[in-house]
Image (cartoon, rainbow, N blue to C red; front, side, top):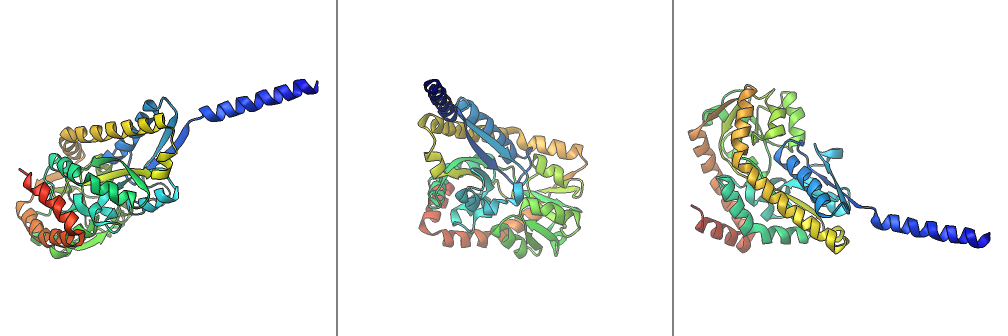
Amino acid sequence: MLTRRLTLAAGAALLARAGAATSPERWTIATEYPASAISGEGIAFFSATASATSDGALQVQPLFDAPNGLRSATMLDSVSKGTVTAADAFTGALGEAAPIFQLSALPFLTLSAADAARLLEIARPAYRAALAARGLALLYATPWPPTGLWSRAPIPDLAALQDLRVRTYDAASTAVLKAAGAKPLLLSFADTLPRVRAGEVDAVLSSGDGGAGARLWDMLRFFTTLDYAFPLSLAFCSERTFAALPPPVAAGVQQAARETEMRQFQAMSTRVSENEARMRQNGVAIAEAPSLRAALARAGEPVVAAWTQKAGADGQAILNEYRVGRT
């Protein structure tokens, strides 16, 4: 009888160990943007693809809308500390951590999705190095549609911008709008919405993208196209967490990351036209403002120069290579 009990106990232990061995790894990946914004679509696609490429050995849960107050600016620390396994962060908000993160959001540097893709390839080693210095590994990049200006009233020229309380999204855009005569307010997207609803913000520097736009158009009925930037978000995870994955699962994560980045850039081919059509259907008046754009470009020149000085020889080399090949 004792022998039988011991045999049963040993069998149960083996089954438990086998179950533990086959239970999937579980990750979370967060963004501060809605599920229908391009970064939200990216983390959803990555989550599904990582599960497929790992044959279910890894389950990734996407988390949207700044879960537990998580903002892009704090995502480097949050992933390092394990609050979430991975994150998709708007790079402009990471500029205080390293100058390279500010690059893609510099004013009027990238004028198309193709520009954004080429600048990414030139700067990718620098992004990887800046993340690695914090124990993080780059997964993929997401391009954003061009930045414009949402507002309560039309902003056809520089005079209309004077003294407006404008939400900005990084140090560079804050400096540009201040130089242009506005009253910039540096806010994350998640923190912007309640301030707009409260009437404390007159205009919002942002793209017209998906769910992000849907949160704005009920309050801000005008959108001025500026092509201020085609900035990036970067998705990253802990190097230690990635290194702990079994090799086949790690290979699946890398494949999912490559497929996600490809998907995100392919989406840009129709994203702007789809966004603008949706905005017009919801009563948003879209207009160009060439003189305002020219004034902001002039205000942006010293900002780019200041970034170049701060970024040093490595930053200058990236800009030089990018500008030489720019058409």
